[in-house]
Length: 97
View 1 (cartoon, rainbow, N blue to C red):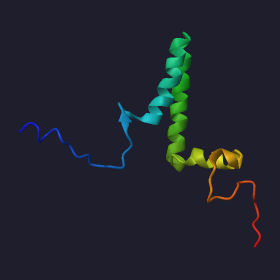
View 2 (cartoon, one colour; view 1 turned 135 degrees about the vertical axis):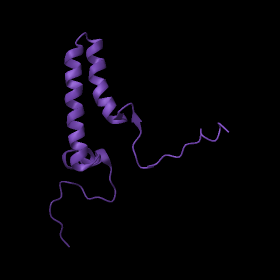
View 3 (cartoon, helix red, strand yellow; view 1 turned 90 degrees about the vertical axis):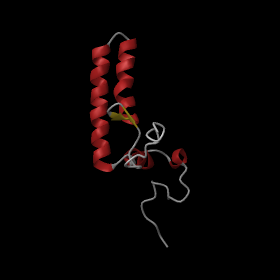
View 4 (cartoon, rainbow, N blue to C red; view 1 turned 180 degrees about the vertical axis):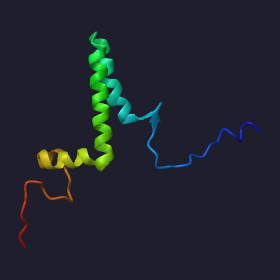
């Protein structure tokens, strides 16, 4: 009967995958600079940079969702980078017809 408890159904299927207390992207932004700082013998600087990046990412995700970076890429990069077929190029401001 102990096998019946091993199959757990998650309560919320839309929740992002978590690593400890953070989502995977937040953990990468937090731990990446900290590990690079550790490798460069500048751990406090890397930790501060990781915390700052984590705070910025949380604010961006709270304000407009995770797609806000994709929207910024659409507006600031040339149209061949994202290759969106159903979307007009971002440099076209007026449409005639």
